[in-house]
Image (cartoon, rainbow, N blue to C red):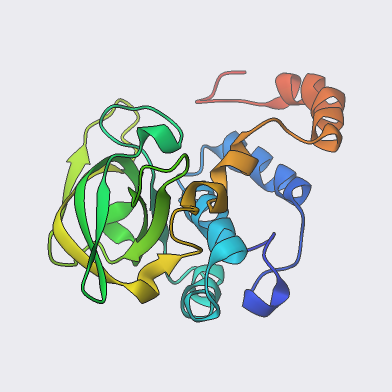
Length: 212
């Protein structure tokens, strides 16, 4: 699960390209798995920006398949990027108060914690990442029906409180800390070369729902 994570956190110390054969087989079998959401997007963010306490608490359990961390990055307007984050996180005593909504949150119903992007200032990034349990006070989940039957949820936050220990990375630097811009952006040249080399093979051998 944590193939690309450091060994000290239960991973194998691999690289992005090591995921290629795994995702090839998962795609071939249409495997319903939270790996991309939890191990890649949330997990890589924790590896990169999480505190030692957060990594020690979550990554070994995630690597053993004992828990899922679900990323909550998209809001009802659907705009991607820091400018699209409107869910507010206001300093409140020793922590923060979260108010707003997220959509398209995968596997939220079975997640141990949710990785939430919230706006903490009007700065260009101005976004902070927080960990919060889906059953915390002020958090509500609603399943979103979709044609694929994928477990997607809308989350509402109404005065949900988190401590400062729940901050992942730095305040107002959350969007640059979370992994998806790097993982979802243009592939490195090595990945492009491999894709170009193997694309004819993939096209000829991949089957979906029993059809080539």
